[in-house]
Length: 136
Image 1 (cartoon, helix red, strand yellow):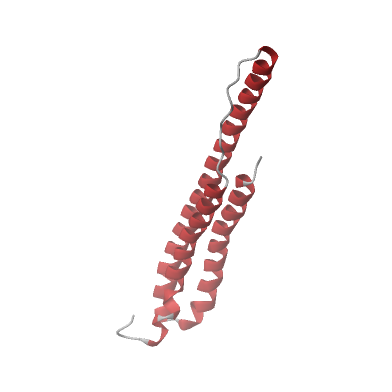
Image 2 (tube, rainbow, N blue to C red; image 1 turned 30 degrees about the vertical axis):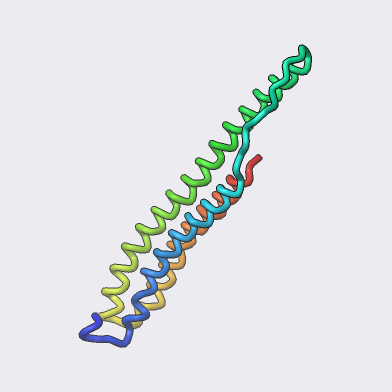
């Protein structure tokens, strides 16, 4: 492609850039999840009723810790699996689109539209992951 027709080489780099953006989605979610650290701690004092209340609070905090841990796991899986699907779609469409664009330059707009819709799959996964990461 670059030897025969060197002009549209930069136009054909768009699928590569769009695939790189999917990795940035995972980085965004990882930064959000690191900021949502959950600390599980309780002070130890042994005094009858106060101990029972603290034990109940500790059990509640443990449940909350497990709930938030699974919410963070679901958040990571959401962005990861949606980026995987979007990356596969971008790879297939990008390969076929670049080859078709080399033969027929009028197909460039159609390739870009399909790439945008494939990227939207990853963006939807990012939005779901952000909502899940804020679950409390």
